[in-house]
Amino acid sequence: MAETLELLDQALEIGYEELRFLVAGEVDDAFDAAERRGVLTDQALETKESVSLDQILEKLNKLKNLQGQLTSEAKKLHESLRQDIGRVKKESTRFKGYGNAVRGTPLIANRYINKVG
Image 1 (cartoon, helix red, strand yellow):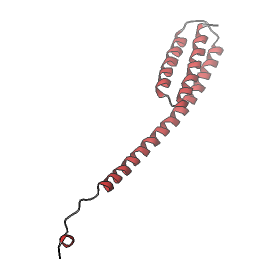
Image 2: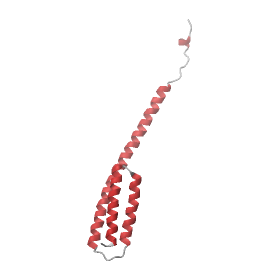
Image 3: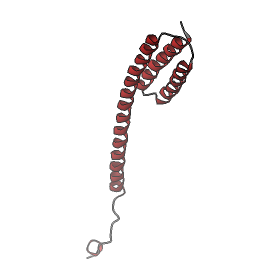
Image 4: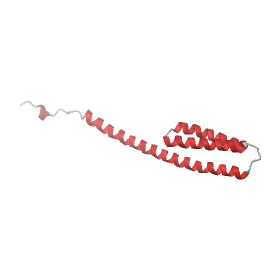
């Protein structure tokens, strides 16, 4: 098989690996996989081989569809993180309120309470 097609196949494999990382929430690993996938795709497109354009087009369409899945999964992860951050902010505000209640307000000396009869 031509080097171009091999490189595109490797890029597809890494893309599926990247998708698994995103689904698992492993963002750093997904980022590394995305970089490797990009390098392989660039190398494949720079290769000056005579390869059937139909075969290349088929691989590129698969990569395009995979990119759509990756983007969709990344958006889901982004939304999940956004909701988590909002939830943490609300909890922080709530805990501040509890902290104020626990500390209480200082007792002000009331002359009626302290008065000895």
